[in-house]
Length: 157
Image 1 (cartoon, rainbow, N blue to C red):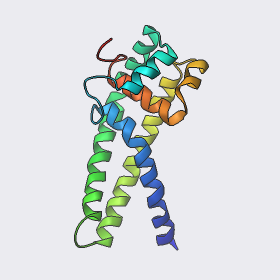
Image 2: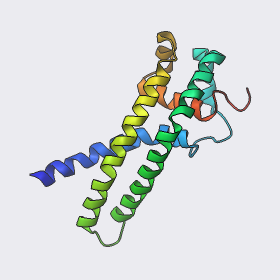
Image 3: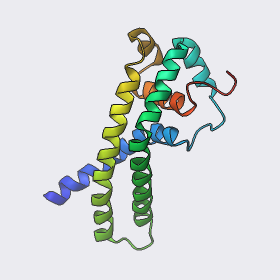
């Protein structure tokens, strides 16, 4: 019974990882466009008309949270890669996979909680009208993390 419940947790955890990886990578400076904004980001920036003060606030929030979020992100992605190595091995080691999942879970929980707090603080910088123009919470969070990573601007601003 406990094993079935535990195995049922894995797809949910993978979904959270998939949804959380993009903002996390953006915060770390990994993945995506390191030199600036993509076409969609320019359109979002124009659509919501961020003030310079809002851009500065988002950047400050990211910098303030960096000492907490960055080590959690690094630890999470390191342990997650180790888990992926175990699940893609030629010989399946059930016990090792379960042990690694148990190791990843609390790290992921801490990381996701820290990201949620950081993103909630960033969303607080925007007006309700600006939030409505982005197109959903996941898209908004990706936008905010991209903006924070780039210091509140795109490469050609």
